[in-house]
Amino acid sequence: MIKRFFSLIFVVLLALVFLPLVTEIKPLSELGMTSAKYAEDGAAELGAANLVTSVVVTYRGLDTLGEVTVLFITTAGIGFMLRRKTILPEKKRRASEILKSGTSFLLPLIILFGVYIFVHGHLTPGGGFQGGVVIASAIVLLMLSDINMHPDHNILNWLESLSGAFYVIMGILGLILAGGFLDNRFLPLGEFGKIFSAGAIPVIYSLIGLKVGAELVGILNKLGREDK
Image (cartoon, rainbow, N blue to C red; front, side, top):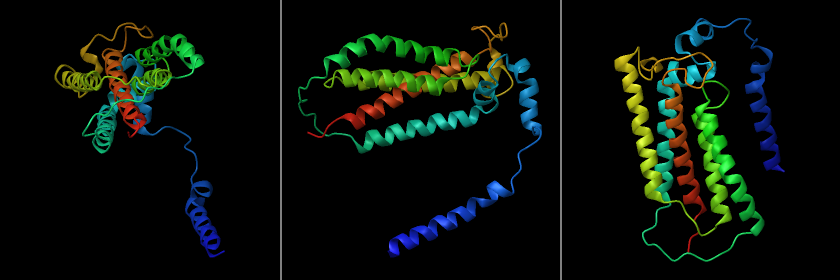
């Protein structure tokens, strides 16, 4: 009874904290100075049809680098906590035939869809993070269909490291050859709305997609291993 009473008090106090968000905060009737600048000049300056991509990859590129770094630290931490000193023999188990058949059909389609998402991130909603997650889901499906199969950690580490290194290199090239870190205009902007447009943004998003996909597969592989 006392536990329920304190829980109720906590819920009431929490409601009082968030009440001003409902009663006092009014929606903005117009964009702020920075938002207006992005909305009015983003497409012309960067050549990307997707304004969100322009903000995430270029205008807010340092924040995106921070997000990728946080994901890398998370991956490294999970790998450290779940590391094994000895390699024990795997248990031989079999997955469902329905799952195997479904995987053989869906796997290439999911990977293709993931690649499409981050390659077209400058044209349509999507991008490197979303595409990387979709690709990681395809690898997880493959792991479920073959329980005794695990991705090669060396390949994942190399893919993650090279993608991250080239991502930083692209940022430095923008700093040297254009107007700032991760400025996409050191490559030709191309024709607006076409796949080969928006300068270096498609390349940057592809690197982010590969890095995020490799990191998530590494995390899920670590978490999916059984203690033997």
